[in-house]
Length: 119
Image (cartoon, helix red, strand yellow):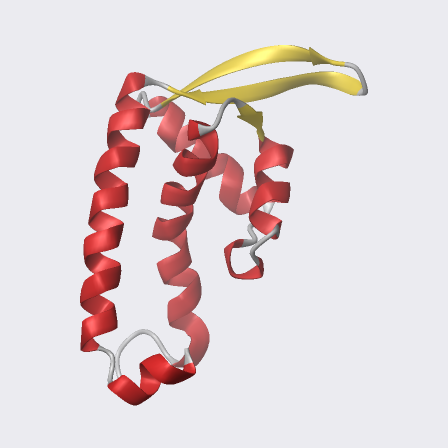
Protein backbone atom coordinates (compact mmCIF):
# COMPACT_ATOMS: atom_id res chain seq x y z
CA UNK A 1 0.00 0.00 0.00
CA UNK A 2 1.26 3.46 -0.81
CA UNK A 3 0.82 6.68 1.09
CA UNK A 4 1.17 7.50 4.76
CA UNK A 5 -1.39 5.00 6.05
CA UNK A 6 -0.79 1.27 5.83
CA UNK A 7 -2.96 -1.66 6.75
CA UNK A 8 -4.90 -1.07 9.92
CA UNK A 9 -3.25 2.30 10.71
CA UNK A 10 -6.14 4.16 9.08
CA UNK A 11 -8.67 3.06 11.71
CA UNK A 12 -7.06 4.91 14.66
CA UNK A 13 -6.85 8.04 12.51
CA UNK A 14 -10.52 7.77 11.51
CA UNK A 15 -11.55 7.08 15.12
CA UNK A 16 -10.07 10.36 16.39
CA UNK A 17 -12.63 12.44 14.50
CA UNK A 18 -15.46 10.04 15.18
CA UNK A 19 -14.73 10.08 18.93
CA UNK A 20 -15.50 13.79 19.06
CA UNK A 21 -18.93 13.12 17.60
CA UNK A 22 -19.50 10.23 20.01
CA UNK A 23 -18.45 12.27 23.06
CA UNK A 24 -20.81 15.09 22.10
CA UNK A 25 -23.58 12.58 21.56
CA UNK A 26 -23.04 10.90 24.94
CA UNK A 27 -23.06 14.30 26.64
CA UNK A 28 -26.32 15.24 24.92
CA UNK A 29 -28.05 12.83 27.33
CA UNK A 30 -26.68 14.76 30.31
CA UNK A 31 -23.50 15.68 32.17
CA UNK A 32 -20.81 13.03 32.58
CA UNK A 33 -17.31 12.91 34.00
CA UNK A 34 -14.29 11.56 32.14
CA UNK A 35 -14.17 8.02 33.50
CA UNK A 36 -17.91 7.70 32.86
CA UNK A 37 -17.33 8.62 29.22
CA UNK A 38 -14.47 6.11 28.92
CA UNK A 39 -16.69 3.37 30.38
CA UNK A 40 -19.53 4.24 28.01
CA UNK A 41 -17.21 4.11 24.99
CA UNK A 42 -15.87 0.72 26.15
CA UNK A 43 -19.31 -0.69 25.33
CA UNK A 44 -18.21 -0.53 21.67
CA UNK A 45 -14.65 -1.92 21.42
CA UNK A 46 -13.95 -0.02 18.19
CA UNK A 47 -14.71 3.24 20.05
CA UNK A 48 -12.78 2.37 23.21
CA UNK A 49 -10.41 5.18 24.17
CA UNK A 50 -7.81 5.83 26.82
CA UNK A 51 -7.29 8.83 29.10
CA UNK A 52 -4.52 10.15 26.85
CA UNK A 53 -7.04 10.45 24.03
CA UNK A 54 -10.14 11.51 25.94
CA UNK A 55 -8.92 14.29 28.22
CA UNK A 56 -7.13 16.35 25.54
CA UNK A 57 -10.31 16.09 23.43
CA UNK A 58 -12.45 17.28 26.35
CA UNK A 59 -10.06 20.19 27.02
CA UNK A 60 -10.10 21.20 23.36
CA UNK A 61 -13.91 21.11 23.23
CA UNK A 62 -14.05 23.12 26.45
CA UNK A 63 -11.61 25.76 25.15
CA UNK A 64 -13.71 26.05 21.99
CA UNK A 65 -16.78 26.77 24.11
CA UNK A 66 -18.61 23.54 23.29
CA UNK A 67 -18.43 22.06 26.81
CA UNK A 68 -19.03 23.55 30.22
CA UNK A 69 -17.27 21.88 33.19
CA UNK A 70 -18.65 21.67 36.71
CA UNK A 71 -16.88 20.20 39.72
CA UNK A 72 -19.18 18.08 41.91
CA UNK A 73 -18.48 16.24 45.13
CA UNK A 74 -18.41 12.46 44.85
CA UNK A 75 -19.75 10.05 47.47
CA UNK A 76 -16.93 7.63 46.63
CA UNK A 77 -13.80 9.75 46.29
CA UNK A 78 -12.55 13.15 45.26
CA UNK A 79 -14.68 15.73 43.44
CA UNK A 80 -15.32 14.96 39.78
CA UNK A 81 -15.32 17.28 36.81
CA UNK A 82 -18.59 16.84 34.93
CA UNK A 83 -18.89 18.06 31.36
CA UNK A 84 -22.10 19.42 29.83
CA UNK A 85 -22.87 20.59 26.32
CA UNK A 86 -23.19 24.31 25.83
CA UNK A 87 -25.57 25.70 23.18
CA UNK A 88 -22.53 25.84 20.89
CA UNK A 89 -21.81 22.17 21.65
CA UNK A 90 -25.38 21.21 20.85
CA UNK A 91 -25.16 23.05 17.52
CA UNK A 92 -21.83 21.35 16.77
CA UNK A 93 -23.37 17.95 17.55
CA UNK A 94 -26.26 18.62 15.16
CA UNK A 95 -23.86 19.65 12.38
CA UNK A 96 -21.46 16.76 12.97
CA UNK A 97 -24.36 14.27 13.06
CA UNK A 98 -25.66 15.53 9.72
CA UNK A 99 -22.14 15.43 8.26
CA UNK A 100 -21.61 11.90 9.59
CA UNK A 101 -24.85 10.60 8.07
CA UNK A 102 -23.98 12.13 4.72
CA UNK A 103 -20.45 10.70 4.85
CA UNK A 104 -21.56 7.23 5.98
CA UNK A 105 -24.15 7.00 3.20
CA UNK A 106 -21.64 8.09 0.58
CA UNK A 107 -19.03 5.59 1.77
CA UNK A 108 -21.64 2.82 1.81
CA UNK A 109 -22.44 3.61 -1.83
CA UNK A 110 -18.77 3.71 -2.83
CA UNK A 111 -17.84 0.39 -1.24
CA UNK A 112 -18.07 -2.53 -3.64
CA UNK A 113 -21.18 -4.63 -3.18
CA UNK A 114 -19.14 -7.63 -2.00
CA UNK A 115 -17.42 -5.58 0.70
CA UNK A 116 -20.78 -4.41 2.08
CA UNK A 117 -22.05 -7.99 2.37
CA UNK A 118 -19.07 -8.93 4.59
CA UNK A 119 -19.11 -5.84 6.79
